[in-house]
Length: 159
Image (cartoon, rainbow, N blue to C red; front, side):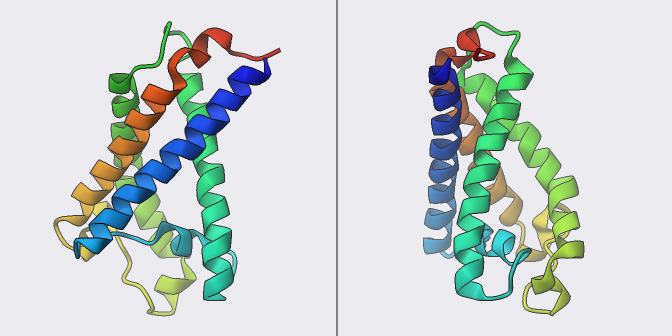
C-alpha cells in the first residue's frame, strides 16, 4: 500500500529533477530555457530569493501531482512504459504550449511589470528554439515517469 504511494511520489520528484536538468543544460548552451522555479514562485511573492525557493517546492509538488495524473490515465494498462510516458509528455507539451504559457502571460506579475516577455502561444516570444526546448524537457519528464512508475499500476490504488 505505502509502496505504491512512495513509488508515485519518488517517480514524480525524480522526473521533475531530470527534466529540470534538461533546462539547465539548455541554459548553459545559451538557449532560451525558462527558470520555472522563479516563474512559479513569483506568482506567490516578488521577493526573488523567496520566489525561487517557493518555486522549487511548487515545481516538485506539480511533478508529484502530474505523476498521480499519469497513473490515473494509464491505470487500465498492466505496466507503465517509456513510450506511454513519452506520449504523456507530448500531451503535457501541447497543453503547456497552447494553454499554460498564454495563461501565465496573463497572470504573471513579471510579465505585468515588464520584467519578462509574455511567452505567448508556443513560447514563440523567446524564439523558434523555445518550443523545442519545452518539448525535450516534457518528453524527459514523461519518459522518466514511464520508466520509474514501472509496476506501480498493479499496486494501485493503495489500501
